[in-house]
Length: 290
Length: 241
Image (cartoon, rainbow over all chains, first blue to last red; front, side):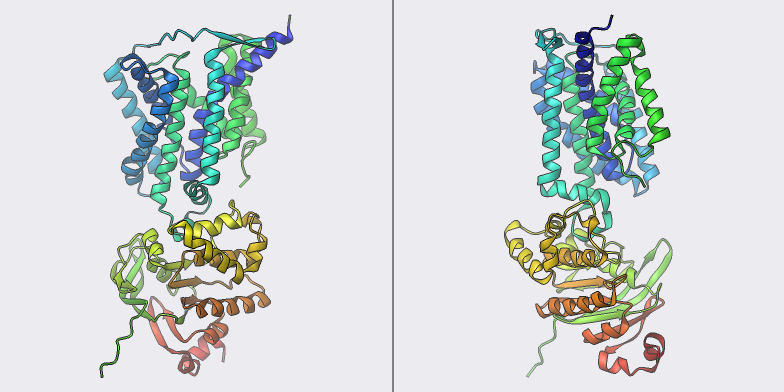
């Protein structure tokens, strides 16, 4: 029988998975909102971040939660250079070129990882991974609670950057009015690269939060990106608030569907919502109709 | 006695530019002196916008030279050109609709340090009091006239030596157009040279000292406003006389 306590636990767990979905989607929607491209390399870059966190732990003994502080700036730099030196120059201003370049990048990265690390699936065992907390009637695992908190902090930092820094203002300006931004003296190529860097840094944080409870193999990132694409469309392409709330919603829907229909069918709910949104509200929950 | 050589703020020589393989500017010479107002007239498609876009670095110069305050700028990026003090206020305003009025103005000073831009902001607000009242409003919700004021205000925030105004009166009511031309003179009185591209030929000639007429990518007429006003071709084509 349905007990409110179990339902509450399912919703809470959904929120926590959803927080990580939201972080992946946040990076994707940020890049879409400013560069107006869909970054097909997002999943592959998440996989790279997962491997980076794995190596940080296994080789250097750095706890994944600490590694986030190291990997976020590192992946910001990686994303910046990728856009500045590879994607931007290869695209030559044509959107469909960017699409193909990011797709090619994804194939290249995945196969390079496959070559170096083989297809083995790896996991790590943290001493505290199975510690639990009681929240009201629910019992939640420590890594999930940590993920929720970390995503909240990351989102807050991202919001503050966009709202209160000169670079953040420039990013928002370029997103809506590129020519006006150029004529105000904003270096658009630099802003594109910063945006790509921020989106990639989100992946580094997400990877560090995933590692304690998830597995790593050369295709691990893809599972998240398909869901993230759904969230981006659901929340409205380019909407940061939409990605955040959409991510949480999708997490809860997946969790509840898994609860009612069985674990393996949890994702049915996600794609049912996706199709409904496409039919009823194609510009998303928080997107602007065009 | 040697006459001091006048030192122009902008000197353009034999400038060629265009899109793809289509040449639009076919060898243009243009000189603007410090503190001057120049009007550039011409029909649609004559190449006025291409001229402005090439001066501000949005379009590449194919050949020829652009010297601004004595420095060659034809290879500079738009951001670099803005930093030098050549500011292009584009046709259609191009304000940032999702940002507040204040944020739009702050971005105008993106290439400058924070300290001095505070004084500039006070000056912009004294020229455009409406912008001060609407500081926290999103630019996209302003009226067309207010958006034009904001676009010019944003340009002034960059501390320009030369301001290119591309069709600033487009879509404004006659009363606002009159106000706009008065403001252009106010701005010019502060020592800022202005290149004015306008469809309002009569009013442009009233505020400008010299004018150029662009046709099919070349200047076909140029000179002092007083002389040009009596030119039969100009009268027939632009003044309807």
